[in-house]
Image (cartoon, rainbow, N blue to C red):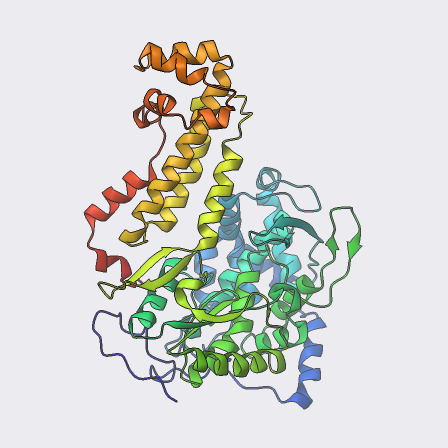
Length: 523
């Protein structure tokens, strides 16, 4: 089965076309290394590139003091995107060091195992950069260990993040800046994770197009512990197809093999996986999964991938089960990865969670609607409970400020939802206000004080005293009493700065046409 060309002018050019239709060669680029030669090629990774001291010193001065000029001369752009004339070199990596530090400094981040902060590195940066450049150019640089941090997952369990030292993060970012122009132009258009100009919004927009065409069943694939299961040899072999500088390959190989410092201080060696948390890890993951993208494209599937979450859109459950079986076999046999059977499924799109959203067709209008997934609704309820504890000891305004920081970012992400979610936003607002009422009542403490405050806020005296003293109500039960609702109105919290996501959504939708929300903007 081959994918049909989409002639709809509303879809940007290149979004729906396959790689072959655009004249791009199959992913992987360059010359394929025979199996019997891979051992010799991989042996190159451990070799140190030789260079004289005079040449190294000259390159260091040019790379550190004139990075922009060095970068331009070191890696000229090629018209042929599939096989650049000048692969990424260590000289190009060195030329990006100062800019790489600015980027990681803007992101802040925690300290690595060495305990050095970003501010400490910045203080000695001018002295540090020439030394690092010399070590990198001569192949002598050895990365430090990686600090393991466990973060809870929304669906249960824990996700392990690796935090490199600040210096290693800077060098990884420089390597990423050198490698990205080499790989980015040839990545598949349906890959949206960790790529410039693409995001969760572009992923859900492309998925909406497929559902609108009638592909209302989804093969939802989840890769089990993807970052921990990537084979080093396979990854290095794919990198060697394009990166010809052995120093760069050696450096990446050392990062992959770096020791991991566990929370209890125990050091663990690694022989598999890509540390999740470093600046280079997202690019490496896309390089690994690009082979999956190519395979799905060759089979004619309509799919969208964001990181290790891949959705394939089909017209029926029967077709979905067939695709699930064949693609799972490819992933496990060819890529040597494992599909998480518990989290993967064939279902209708409205029943599944993809980058925080779910898609369904309006039964009356027939349009495809973008809504919050069940998991996203559960997450915001859980997060608001954390931000509005009943034992909040600070001021109400302080609680609202903390809550607003989360709500503004949350709405910025979910504002692309279509009109049917306005009621959901209003429900979230009502739940938040009730929790704030409970906090306010807790601060007033005694029933006598609560009754007096309600009278001051406009509640009839008789009503206020009767409702407050009616039975042995808990603070939470009293927060939903009609008398308390009338006293602590919506305007009471608005005056104290509370953000209403329902009101923001109404203002947002009034400024744009609904179809415009679905437009792909892929640059």
